[in-house]
Each structure stands twice: as C-alpha cells, then as structure tokens.
Image 1 (cartoon, rainbow, N blue to C red):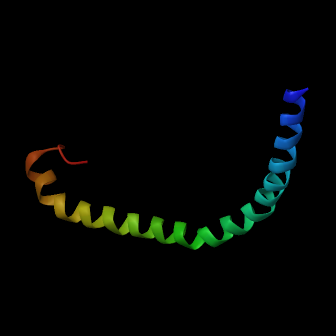
Image 2 (image 1 turned 120 degrees about the vertical axis):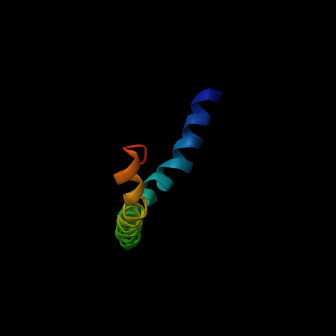
Length: 66
C-alpha cells in the first residue's frame, strides 16, 4: 500500500512538470536557435583562420596539422 501511495504522489508531482516541459521546450528551442547559428558561423571562421595559419606548415612539412 505504501508503494502505491508513493507512486500516486510521484504522479501528482511529476505529471504537471512533464506537461510544462513539453509546452516550454519548443519555445526554448526557438530562443536557442540564433545562438546555434552564431556558433556555426564562429566555428567556420575559426577553422578558416586555422587553415590559413597552418598553410605554410602543411605545404612544407606534410600532413601533421589537421
């Protein structure tokens, strides 16, 4: 009986929280989208800079830098 009461309490506490999470998740995803786009752009710029900086070493030395 105690186990059943604990399950009931868990359901009462967690079910509304799960429903709220389902409703809020798409809005959080939309808010984070610009940051992801900026992250992709910054990563591309940094990889381009790294490729330019290591170009002489790659031309002279070989393929140690990736």
